[in-house]
Image (cartoon, rainbow, N blue to C red):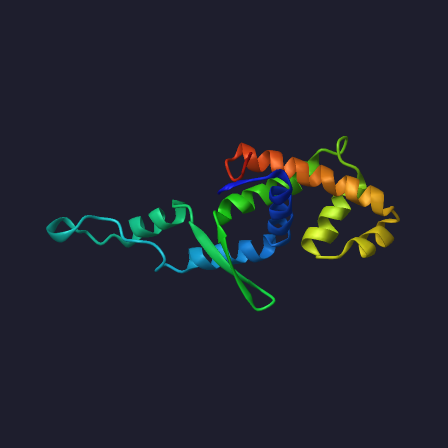
Length: 157
């Protein structure tokens, strides 16, 4: 992915976390489509059609991109499996590390990124201030940015 300034990277991560379910479905659909990848074997006389090998290769080859649709807009997601890895790592980190994360962080993750609720709804539901909401969201996004840099998904300049 191209280099981004920090603010742009945080916004992109926030957007991709919100698109987690759509990306997951697109990857599953793409993996189910057996025609998206090339064939194994050689060319000419050496070519051997091996459906089992073809399927194995297609299942381990990372997808370059998938397409999702939001509000009648088609969006191409590059490195979709890396984005899924990032989302899973974020959800898992805050679910398991109870001493680090408060209950409000877990609920913000759920309501914002799974249920797609806005901050007014979340603040009211969790009985927290707007200030606390954004502080907790910052913790989520900064952890996600650190992880994204670690797995080579984003480069920050």
